[in-house]
Image 1 (tube, rainbow, N blue to C red):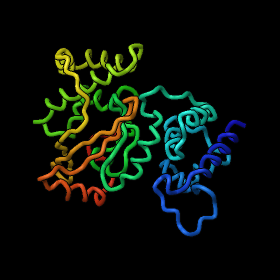
Image 2 (cartoon, rainbow, N blue to C red):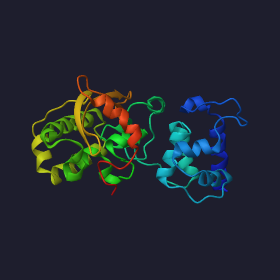
Image 3 (cartoon, helix red, strand yellow):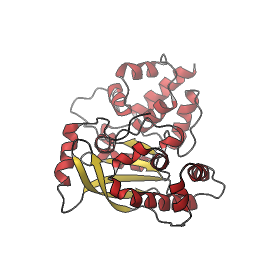
Length: 283
């Protein structure tokens, strides 16, 4: 019965969305209100057959990651997202996890950024959603779970994470990550355990992190110029721009070519190369 209710709820949310709301063309001949099933499947990254089964109430129990993908595709509010987890008999994920609900405004902006790499991350650098060009530039971050979902955590515990940056820039990036993490932790409620748990883990796992943490540097990363390694395109120099949500828990990052470099041509080639896994191996 609950799977039937889940299907009905998905259909009701699908029918209220206009294609333009999610960056899709309306087309001259649409026979159904809102989005078609195949369009929702495309936005959520699932097969059409699987999504059809869900709407019919005959599909298998969707995973937490699948529910998060459907909530983003259907532009659900936080309350609607929680209700969807309830109908699927899944626990609502903790705030800040890889399955966190993406701020609707940021998701809308990300949808409209089709010609530049962009992604939404949490204040602890957990990637929530990437557009295809971000995957092509940075690698697919959707497969990481637990503490490894945070790029900062991987940076200090997994040498493979550092392949993204030239070795000469590692010290600078390490210091910037630690200062940003201290600023993010200070902005959270004193009773929050997510940030303190991550900091404690890194203090025990990384002498480099512990030494930098002792310096007490505090600074959010807002606008940054970075050099990124790409296995096919070589060294790409970009400006990384940040848009923060009102509570500071999420950030929309987008990457533009640095002035005075040939990075514009390199970024144009990303769409041709495609979304192959280029930086970090999926665990």
